[in-house]
Image (tube, rainbow, N blue to C red; front, side):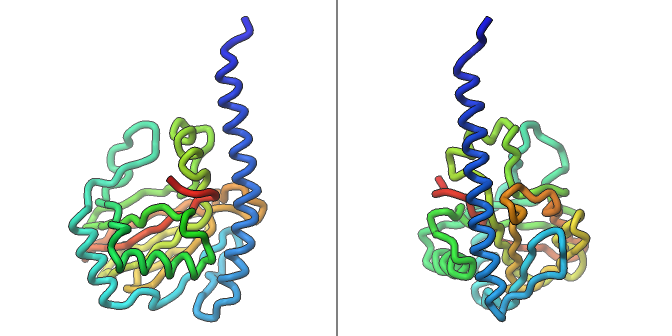
Length: 234
């Protein structure tokens, strides 16, 4: 039996796309790295196994207040890309922010400019809310190309390159973003922007970007996140 030729074609195309993404990730990584390294307002965390940057005061107090209100208006139980539901793995609430809103659009443009990324490569900004005890256990932002969801995601813009996440409020206790494998944990600071490369310099997905949204002990944590792809998103 020869087998199903369509399966061969789909597998071949998926591999081809994954290789193209690796080349693009290496190119994008080098470009954004150079841009961030040249910006005196951006701090590179002293981590050897992952490229993680931070910038304080990226958002104003007023912008944080407005984004928190927007998240409360759209927040629904967060979902997973995983093939099967894993109870308790992601218990936060989240929702996409309206790109037609002038303030959302302005914040997106500032992030685009900071990283030097094409706006078309960016996903819609997502807001997340973590109430005491809610969390997002260890995960990576890049896509597993051998998963069932990759077939659709590769058509929506390919692999994720960089992540930009802004903290919208201070937390009394808990709520850190913990990069487990890299051995660093970041405490939320209102208005600060955390940025990391989901790939290694050669464009392969970086396993060391494994991270978790730790549960707040006191207070509710609000963040907004923007992911970038290797091609036009959507």
